[in-house]
Structure formats: C-alpha cells, structure tokens
Image 1 (cartoon, one colour):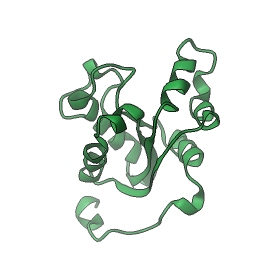
Image 2: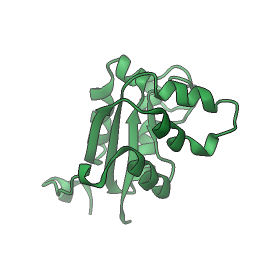
Image 3: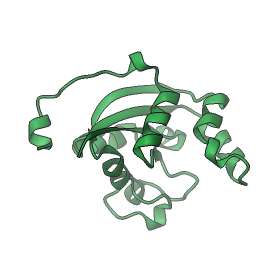
Length: 151
C-alpha cells in the first residue's frame, strides 16, 4: 500500500470542548504522521470551497455557517492507507452509529456536532489539504518509529 495524505480537522465543537489533544493523540497513536497542522479560523470562501459538493442541498448553509463559527485545528496526516485509517479512527458520521473506541463513538453526541472531519478519499484528501495549507506549510520528515509502525 502506498503512502497517502489525508486532511483532518477538529471542528469548532471539538475545539470548544477542549478535545484537540485527545483527537490529535488518537491519530498519532494509530501511526499517522502529522505533516501539517495549524489553529485557524475558516473563511467563508474556504468553507464554500471545502463543502462545494453540497451546494444547493438544504444543509449547505448550515455547514458553512458552522465551520466558520469558531476556530478549527487543520491537519495534514500521512501514512500507509491514511484515508481509511483516519476514517476508521473517526467513526461513523452519525455518533449513534459510531463504534465505541472511535472519536465520534466516544466523544460526540449528534451529527451536527460530531467533533472532527476526515477526507473520504485520497483525491479529496489532496484537494482539502490544498484548501487549508500552502505547499510550504507541509513538512517532509521521516520519524525514527516508522520502521516499527509500517512494514
């Protein structure tokens, strides 16, 4: 399996609930490497670009309004099968469907406040990383633990 990059964000509810460290730690413990991370406010333009596929749907305006309502922690994560691994760590979109042990299964209560976003494909991961990070904000590095995490 090739090394992939994926985009993950701790949403405003996760930041407000002081869950950033918990969320970041879960991805690190799964062996995903942080290659970019920043605390930021999402602009309306960024939100519209990020959620563009949902434009025209009844919930679109609420998504844009919510993601711009407070700061987020944006992350670019890297690893073998990073998208699937991150999504497994996050859990199902609806917290009531998320398995115990996942971020949403353990920490979220309802779909509109489900703590974290994760890319749904390698292509969307690259697209979303491009929305939230400039190329020079991503750091290439090789951790000494990689040989103990990946074959």
